Length: 75
Image 1 (cartoon, helix red, strand yellow):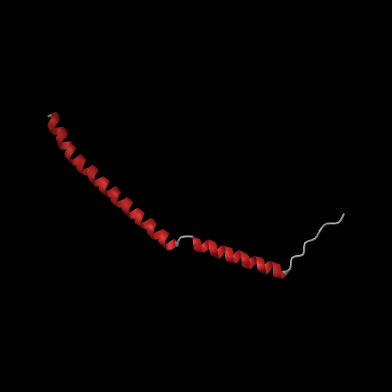
Image 2 (cartoon, one colour):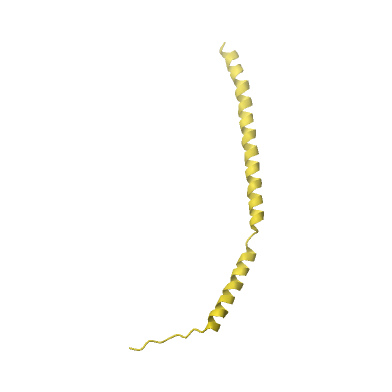
């Protein structure tokens, strides 16, 4: 039983490593910059926090107004 052998030279390996490196570089260049992603994420979190505190303040204001109104109406 004879098997077909494959001979891989160092030149073949080097060429493939170079090809993979170029491919990886293309992929890395097509991705957005991580600094931009981090800054964008921070901005979205800050906006969300501002909206959350505005909502809490609004609900607190409503609670402060509604409590005396309910007391006056039930008296």
